[in-house]
Length: 260
Image (cartoon, rainbow, N blue to C red):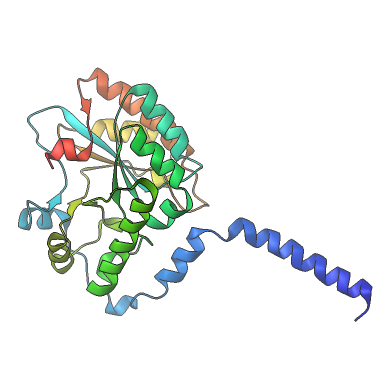
């Protein structure tokens, strides 16, 4: 091969490598892990979370007590450097504590953001390591995923968590029994912002404000796939906080709301 051709091919490889560097992130790893789970035909069906909360009232929680105007802001799928820092700025400005359900793979990637959460008084919970629904995994695989996520959190902030939010909210009795035995409190939600749809901030905030009741657990996201723009979530959350404070609501962490 001539030197001209060699230089040309080296140039192509370098360009391709740069492109891969921009896309080789935890989402690729997640997709690879998801490809290893059971086929669709083999997956058990999820059970309605309301039903699970009635069956396991000391383990599965959709909301808190309804006799006080206390509510909890929660965020899934972070930490994410595109969103989490700005969101923490808003929470600090508004003096509002929140609960973050973290993906272990991202905790390993961005431990400084997790440290900041803890330093600023927020509570952290597990959202699993790879964002795999537990019902798609064997109990052994599920426990391994939970343990790996907790290890990542421990490496970042020298603490473990007994709070768990299942990816997509997908659970069944078998997995709840397993989580109960492992000492987890399963935190679902009663208000879904649907911010992953990347709607305008006013629409996100309006939906949340309309649905909030005393004891609400509000679901937002501070992390997402890299093709989803969550910048509107930051603006929406600030609007929600200001309006809900005017309506007499107090923001607390999930453990405070549920008395855990």
